Image 1: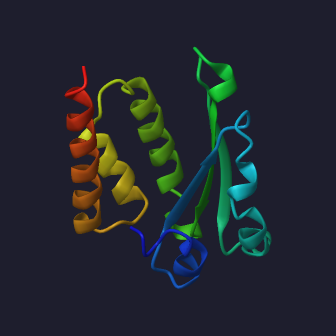
Image 2: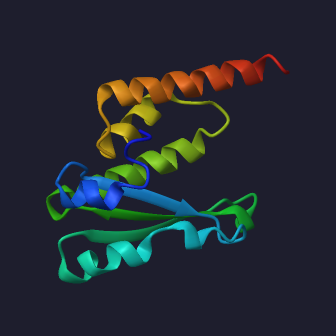
Length: 133
């Protein structure tokens, strides 16, 4: 996954990545980290589609997350599927869900090996956190 981070636009232009996802929390002020200006010319010409989606945090509205999705036109079906997975992930935030993590990884175009590595890392992290209870 490290090979992809920071190279999403190039990989999408090469047809190697169907969907990219960025997110920010308005109250944190990290919106400027999203490469909107890099993607905008391709969005304007229609070779990449863009959609913004805010996942509200009902308990802490200041910490609601806004996602920006970029997809190749033929892969636009992935956006509503990813939104559904993110809502399910938020609803299940107290318990890591390997299935949802795998779905998100597949929708973003990661390989099975990359997803396996990501899930293992998450499970190891969750397991070590539980030892501190």
